[in-house]
Length: 245
Image 1: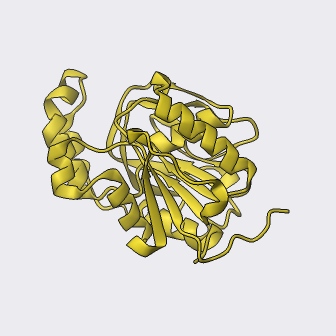
Image 2: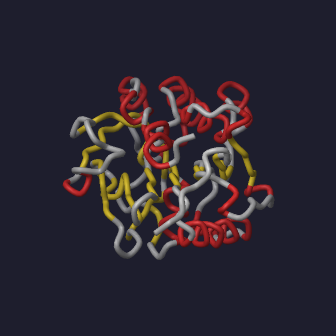
């Protein structure tokens, strides 16, 4: 049985990258957006920019870990990413509650024995519908949530094969592995609980030409962007349920 984690410990945010400078200046970096969505004050967290070569302390130094999204690709196997994957394996073995988002979702899956690569269905962008699957029933993180809800998407790679023994909790039309639980207290989402509709609209405007070249309906995607309160509440629910202060 895993020993209780002292409540005074901070939440670790593993910072794996940022949006471009224009979007970052408007909305903040990915670690900042994740911290805000999780309701964390500066005193309650430690942000470690692993993409800059920084390393976190031992897993026992934290009450939980959150892993941000990134413009990087897990399949590039950059040294900082491989080092972070090794840390995640150590943290999972130690029983640390963890929640990964997008790149963090993929990195957790890769670190713990899954397979990551480009989504065969193509890029998934904008506000899309997430559907909970039967394994989600009875999970305290998802208790009381509607069977479908909107969530913000922004990814080209995905989890192609979950780690052995993982439970797939949610899907979308373009991604069968939108949310995964590994063991008792490790969760990850391909969608972004931390993104608001303004960020997604701004992103679509900034990269619309690139996406149009991929035959995406950018005007339609932009018109469909909306608030995602159910998805947006998951990080706070996770900390309340698995790593209360």
